[in-house]
Image 1 (cartoon, rainbow, N blue to C red):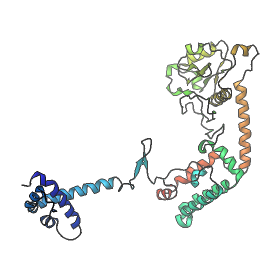
Image 2: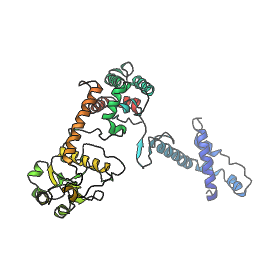
Image 3: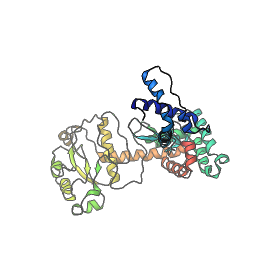
Image 4: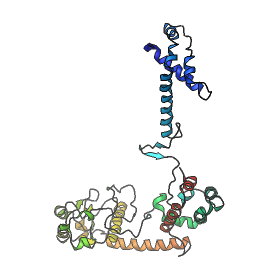
Amino acid sequence: AVPRHCAGRMLQFAAQNVRQGAGTGVSSQALLATAVLPQTGSATASSCHRRGRALATLAPAVVVLVQGHVRSRRHLRSRRGGRRGLQAGYKSAEGNLVQRNVAMEPKNLYDLLGVSPDAKASAIKQAYYEKMKVCHPDVAGDEGAEMCMLLNDAYDLLSDGERRAAYDEQVSAEIGSPMGMVQYDPTDTSPTWKWKPKRSNRDEKPRFTGQPYSRSLWDRVTDEDRGEKWSGQQFVFVDEWTCIACRNCCDVAPNTFCIDVDAGRARVYAQWGNSEEYLDYAVTSCPVDCIYWVSREELQVLEFVTREKLHDTGNQMPCPMTMRQGTAGAQDPFYLASEWNRRRKARQASQQKRLGGTAAESGNQLKERIQEVFSGLSEALRRAGWGR
């Protein structure tokens, strides 16, 4: 038997001998049998040397133990993706696992070339050359032909200062341009939409995202609470300049209306939070007729121009009584919405002209084209050109 205080040192030197003998043709049992422990001069070392021959009888068991330990370490390392620094992923600051060398789908022409929106012309030209080295048909074959043409169009557009400025306005949502209108899908008119909790608009100017600010519970209305307004996908809107904050609507439909803490007037925070019967009663019983049934397209513009005007005035609204008497400046949100729509159409026509006329692609069309071409590439080509 091997004393307990010798077992650790014997296993340590046994493992060292097995590693040194790997690939030399010498059996592990022979290496263990001839293993010599170092001279330390201590009583423990002497005891270990007196029992050194015991390793010869324990050689098969020690070899199995040591080799099994080495295999376990190699297996664990292979599952982790190699040594430290070569792992398949890492954790971000938020704690999410981020994969290495994963191809990220580009969302706009800047992502396509791999440059920042404020990149200089020389950086755009260099990035264009780098991407062409990966996707040119002479390198990637026929697979890279469509991407090669897309890269040519992207370089031509971003190399022209006027066309680039017009493109930046169209994709300002993605590149972070400080504009009032951002890119959105104009065909999205569904009765439900993504919703974010309300934030104070005192500091940051509101942006038009093509989605109402209120939350939509249209799809959660039960069958007995539905009616013609629900079937017609109608929504309620409060004219906050006409509202006198009487709280009548909040009492009738408390799951739909509230008194806004910033403006101090009634506002819709959740569309269809109550049944159609209660919503209809809230509209008809309003003492100043400031609640309206509107469509989804009208709602998103009305709520935006209301937030925008309140931001400009610091959420300060004139007294509703003085407005009704004509002694204070009142705002008509429906007039503001029509003027905003008129300016938006004029801006879009100007952008289209600056981009090259009616034959030019809009920001949404370019985005769809980028997604279509990128999805047609193989995974290897994606990683080679857009891996991170």
